[in-house]
Length: 316
Image 1: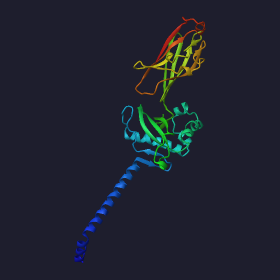
Image 2: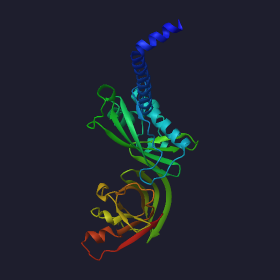
Image 3: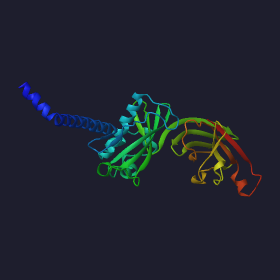
Image 4: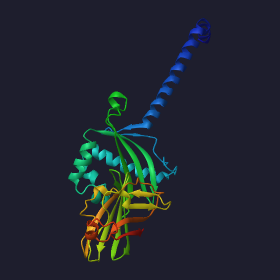
């Protein structure tokens, strides 16, 4: 039998070697294809709701270069993925429950408002998303999120025509539960700082930070027998923020009614003023300047160029 095998080998050696090479190449190609497919599976995970998340998890801020610990990143990714999955499933009530109390108070007062202003506009169809880490400040983490139409499965491409951008901030509530701030809302800070001048008291109650602007809420008290005008309402620099580098950020004073800018004698009111300041954790606001306060409206209405005016700075 051995002689027969040797005779067969000698007669068919070339064919046998070619067959061995072909089998080896086939095995190599199968392994290579399986490896490529496994890498693609790691990069794009498709769940039953068609939520697609890129495996390049954002661990480093694109603004500051700061890197987050793995445990923090995983926690942040979990709640964002949960939020998107709930929305893709149509479970907007459960998605709304993931929002912070401040976000509910300042942006979406009711679940119905959240449904109309956010859920219906973004999740009318299933969405995929992509994240970038922007800011990390005092335990709050802000991500830029881009929602894509879920057409990757059918076309293999991401259409830019229906992309929607938002900024999601992850924070913890008083019970250390992880919560979300969405729609560009970053956070709310209680300030409660006051300054008084010539019987006019201005108190900065709090600050509402959004990605593109800030809103300050004030309580103003007039202790005089004159009607006071905080601003004529046509110059944003009349009321401005001043940061630690003495850079000034104008108010959008034209959005405030003239009635709100006036205080009758012995009165107190609260007003909200928006400022043209993009969120930047390294631009610390040190004071708010009211530069052109008119102390007597009646005198001013008489076109008196010498009507008494005063500047009042609230240090915060």
